[in-house]
Image 1 (cartoon, rainbow, N blue to C red):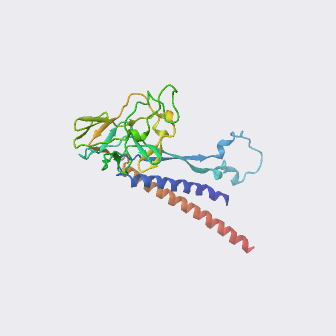
Image 2 (cartoon, one colour):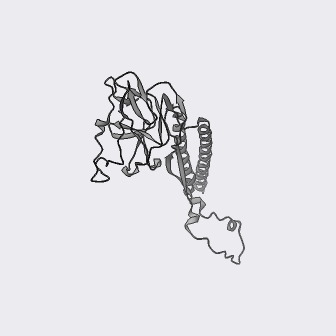
Image 3 (spheres, rainbow, N blue to C red):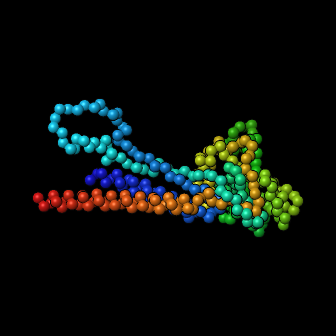
Amino acid sequence: MKNIWVPLSGAIAQQRKVEVLANNVANANTPGFKRDQIAFREHLTALERNTPDINLPHKDWAPEDFYHTQGAENAFVKVDGTYTDHGQGQLHPTKNPLDLALQGPGFFEVLTPNGIRFTRRGSFTITSNGTLTTSQGYPILKKVNRSALGEESNPADPAKGALPPPTERVFNLSGRNIIISLQGEIIVDGASQGDLSVVEFNDNSALKKEGSSLFINPDKQNFSTTAAQSSVYQGFLEQSNVNAIIEMSELIKANRHFESIQRAIKTYDQISGKSVNDIAKF
């Protein structure tokens, strides 16, 4: 009963789809969250060979001569991968001066224990020593001119200087009246404290999710050096781009599809068991 692997491969793929959809639904209210989508690939044995010429022999035809599967019993489904939808989420007003939302493709640059990461989640806070951090306690970094400087440990041009260490790009804010412009400049009590590092990429699909609304950029050449297209809105948070109604509908459909595949697998198992029992009688 090797054919059981065909519906089993579909069940595994549908289970993965359910997991992705469930994660989207669970983060429907997470600020800055970007929904994931899953892609499938089907292996069709009929496509591995050319279509044979039609040659009808002179013989007595049997019913099975008219039911050619073209290798469909060996067709398998597998998850080809997942990708992130970086579509813009709605901006929700909070009136909190430390809540920042991005309109455009950019990301805030963040210093974590594992290195520099990027996030769209703009719910920030100021620590007791004046450091501007994310809600997880990761410092927000100041802007640098990447087109004029090289990269850490991988200079784009030996004649250019390297980026300053991330620890030197941390904000140290002290004051009460905090104003942040659309360009990301932070002004405290009338004095400029520098610009937020809002980074844009040539290809957002190249970013990898790390969890906690953080992204990794594995390719240093992916940084965009063109004029920034993103704006910073103070007192707003970008909502998740998950449409809960659509995701729930897709989740229900995936669950039903999974259940139908389970019934097919159960039928295969019953046929197999019946064949074994019937053979044992002889």
